[in-house]
Image (tube, rainbow, N blue to C red; front, top):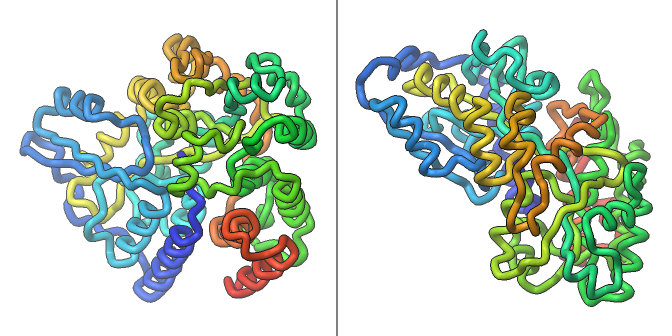
Length: 437
């Protein structure tokens, strides 16, 4: 699902996975089959689900499971930021798994690291779910031959924009016109930035929220950004591909296109009310946070276009920790929550575009519109955007930690405003060296 970008949270999360690695290397890891098979009868049990941001699992949806399974009560814990959920997960895994939820949500960027320890999670393979997901989603959730994650959503990207601000700036503002303004089917990042330069000349608003989001969109179009496909890291000092993306993003900040508002921060939340920026890279799940932060603002819309072709930002999984007390019942709940019917409901509730083929092709998804986004046909748009995804980036065990060093470099330039781009890049190189890869 969704990526947060607060530096402090990411550092804590990186520390959490380091603790996990050290603990498992010391004790050898392994599955705790305490409670294996429990909770599958009629005895009343409570199952806990840990998610973050908004998975679309409303109280009504969870109550539906209890209606179908009268002995099961489902309780959901929702972390405000994905980093908080990640830190909690990795810290408790390192301590043996005590205190984890029966079902734990995993964001795609964590999966490569956690996949190194498949015995900590239940194997969810089941003939009933074969063919449920797009192939690459299954590949992402598989480790050492085990299916450790049931796919929830994926994040095909479009461009969300403030139609009213476009009108005030004298730019074309209808969705099809904006798609053409940004380059249409052959849209490039240069097209997107050129439109931004035109916009900021005529508006007090910035073009987009923050450079880390732009960088995220760009790097998700790179097949192997930080590691070779055999898992070996690409030294950051020698990584011209990443350096070029970094320089492109920081140059747009110098041109005044970025609002410099770190995503998920209080200032970012407030920026929606203050007309701080006119566009956002918009994976399907982002429509929910935009709406929740924009109360009273009715100018948002979506253009069926994305620079560089297509891209997937985010997407999550449900896992069942092997240390749980009710693993069989938890596996049934995870299977139910990721069935096409429930993922269709989650899409309606929170805009989380399903990774299930049947759900994507359903009339409900295909015809679904988003009233807040001026009635945008989001089902059709994000289906189109998903069809344009050509790259499934390789993300190895070091992806998250290396990615963090570059994201932090951008934040120093744009948000903290403590460093010029060259100086901040040098700090990124030092941070990379400290990883000891």
